[in-house]
Image 1 (tube, rainbow, N blue to C red):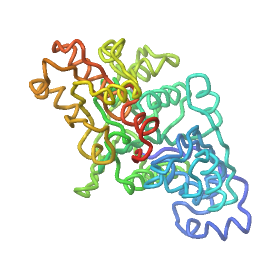
Image 2: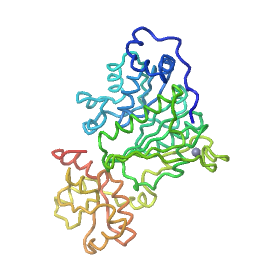
Image 3: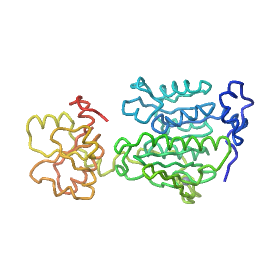
Image 4: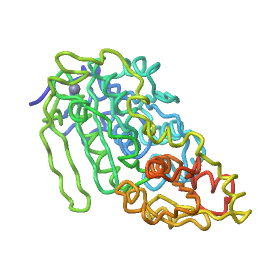
Amino acid sequence: MSFPALVEPAPELTIEEVRRYSRHLIIPDVGMTGQKRLKNAKVLVIGAGGLGSPALLYLAAAGVGTLGIVEFDEVDESNLQRQIIHGHSDIGRGKAESARDSIKEINPLVEVVVHQERLDTTNVMGIFERYDLIVDGTDNFATRYLVNDAAVLLGKPYVWGSIYRFDGQASVFWAEHGPCYRCLYPEPPPPGMVPSCAEGGVLGVLCASIGSIQVNEAIKLLAGIGEPLVGRLMVYDALEMSYRSVKVRKDPECAVCGKNPTVTELIDYEEFCGAISAEAAEAAVGSTISVHQLEAMIDRGEDFLLVDVREPNEFEINRIPGAVLIPKGDFLNGSALERMPMDRQVVVHCKSGQRSAEVLAVLKGAGFSDAVHVGGGVAAWVNQVDPSQPAY
Ligand SMILES: [Zn+2]
């Protein structure tokens, strides 16, 4: 099913624009009218990260007239493996600013609007209102639900994508014509169950595969051509090299776009998604030590078992001396508990303190009442105690 074009055509293209976009103009489905629609289009890209990088570059090259970027973060060395809109000399700069400079180099005819802020309930409606279409490149569930609900409430279509290791997904959510993100995923996963790219990794080029699908869909919607990915979920497996498209139906009971919606205004998304589970938060109260306290325990030669609950690949990158690796999953399935000593204190840590708090809840539940976890994890250790080790 095709839809009418989202954007009216601009009055005309300049001679320079005709030269620049000639390979589009000679495609009959795009043509002069389609290119004029792109010129008139205002597209917002959320995040100039893994998905936002290729998306912004191709939207700019394609001649989308106005590109908005929502991004508050700075460029880190570990971003460069996939966030190709940023270069080595951009390390430490704001990502939004760095992305704007790259876009200007690719296509100076594009007007770039930088929203250097974190998207939240106070600013999302005001920002979204200014655009025809949203491309979502966020990497966390709280922001995804925020984006979805704001888009539904404003009646805006958005192109969603997600990436993890070798697996990618993409869809177009547009409540007026099909399902929304909540129709597909009514509830966020329990905190700590779905690893982020920072925890699990992502193949750099996967971002280009999914980001380019998002741009493809954006162009189709703006120009009113082809069959948009409305009501379909594209599932890509880079190891198998397979693309599958799965039908997604609108859920009449959907909390935000259903017949009797319960979400009629924006909610508290951090609480809805829970940064860590209630059990983990409770276990961590009074049982969290700092990396400096851990360092002092090691220096005093105290007898305790230090357990690193990250994954083996992460353990290879950096570690706290003396730590034994037992991944979080072994605690969740119970198999690690028999290896825990009854006569020594157990100290657990992960990368940042989220996974170790989940493990701490399991340990406390199994009777290890004096167990503690390390706030900030190995990231804080490298940052504050041993900067000779690499961060990731
Ligand atoms: Zn819905």
